[in-house]
Length: 352
Image (cartoon, rainbow, N blue to C red; front, side, top):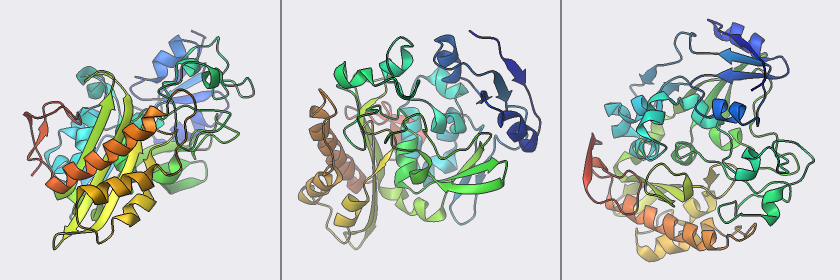
């Protein structure tokens, strides 16, 4: 590990000023960052620890049904907040399906948004990776790539975004609050992460020094609470990233779908909002045929980036099944195996 400077600011302004210099990185829990530093993938010259900044660890529920989540809120604390789980059940289920209990107790909301891809070629400092070293190429293109992207990829990068949490956030229209050298601004989550294009090293809409301070879910997102699910297919039932995942949320009126929200994970370098599929379900009856058709629409632009054509059909089936589960209604308790297609026994966290 290289030598680095370690700073502990106590205000947002101090943190932004400290992190605006070249080679600086923010540190919260470090569950992803420290692994990357140990492997030589990231070599920041300065770490700016934000854990001493007051006010970033609060969950603030609004009377209208919305919520503001501080960037330092721990994943486990958010998932087990009773009112949050009641209003945003798919988000709670996604949080509890990610990593291990130990990591969820440490990892933060802001860090989850900013975690790096788990592409093995990105983690291997001896492999060519345009994301890690721009212009060197992408060894994943001709390597082991069955788990790589099928949407939004480019010849420069075929990696996927690893977050579970961000998938239902994308479906529900979350807003990221950012403070930078030019002040505070709101960034819609669907515009926060970038597709690779010709510059895969530029992963988000953040500028140097920009600090994520909170995530907001608007009040209208809580209207989906009665019909919202997150479904995740992984190679192991626990402690594994998604091969494909889907968040589905429906607002029902008189037996028809008044509004649908759909997002996919594990298929692109960002959580993939399927707006055309949502539109296809407007005023439809919640039938298997309607959901299969919507799933076809959601994957219209999909194409293999290597030995991963199976992911396209898998994604179609997961979208359709997530919609069926959402139409059946949010369960009273999160399943004992959150987000697993094999879950049946109820767990212990009450939703409604």
